[in-house]
Structure formats: C-alpha cells, structure tokens
Image 1 (cartoon, rainbow, N blue to C red):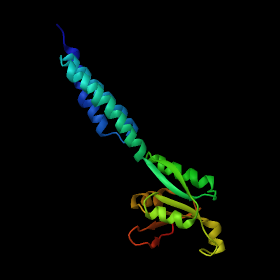
Image 2 (cartoon, one colour):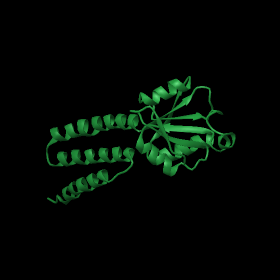
Image 3 (cartoon, one colour):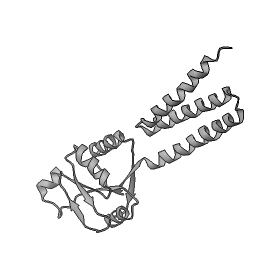
Image 4 (cartoon, rainbow, N blue to C red):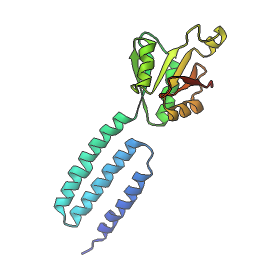
Length: 188
C-alpha cells in the first residue's frame, strides 16, 4: 500500500505553522490558524485517532478561531474622542483612517458633550486620543488657519505613529501624560 500522501499532509503542518508565526495581519493569521487546525485534524484522522481529530476540529479549530476573532475584532480599535456638535474635516479623518489602517486598526469615533468630559475620557482611558478644534485664545489667528485642530493622545506608540505618518497640516499633535495631567506639546 502506498502511503506517500501522509508525508505530504504531515509536511503541511510545519509549513502552515511558519506561515502563522510570520503573518503580520491578524485576520490573515486567524485564517492560517484555521488551516493549521484542519491539517492537524486530517493528520489525526489518517493516523487513526478519530477522537483526537474530532477534538482538534471542534475545540482547536472552530472554538479557538471564534474566540480569537472576537478578541482581535475588539482589540484592534483606535477610539478617537470628538465633541458632539463639532465636524472634523474629512481630509483629516481620511488621513487618520489611512494611517491606522496600515496597522490594521479600525478608527472609532466616540462623541462627548464638552471639552472637560472629552479630556476626562482621555485621562480615564475611555479613548486613545482626542481631536478638537482649537480655540481662538489658544493660538494666533494665522496659526489657527494653519492648524485648526488639536490631537491629543496618551499612548506613546500612537503618538510616534501619528508624528511620523500624519501629513495633514490641519492638526497639532500633543502627547499627554496620564499620570501628571499636564500636556507636553510637540508641534509637528
């Protein structure tokens, strides 16, 4: 009897595992994890371990993938706090979506009624960043036209990403320390 196909199927396991380890996109990693589980279940079936194959198919593949999908979906969100009645320029929002899309983050807008509750939400870690229109008394009129928005974040990694990749001249980028409630402003 020729069992060479078993070697081919078994060789797919390390190949799928390597693909999984080096995958950058978390959604693609979920698909590859499902393929890895299906290959493992197939190997167990071919080798005569039907009970282990069934367990791998149900728990290792279906349940794990479902739970991972929920976790990935909920954790890859960048929550941006904005004021309820304020409209942010579409170009700036497109820039944010493009930047965070590179890192597989969904941009979710959370609205607040006033600037105090918006700042408090940033400090209480309800949002990752805030974007509000500058007040006339905060900047000179010329600078107001150049950078009409203030974008504040409390997360160093988001600050670094926005500082290097945000090309929009419409916003000042501010890193806020959540321990000491004083912002350290670094103009782009």
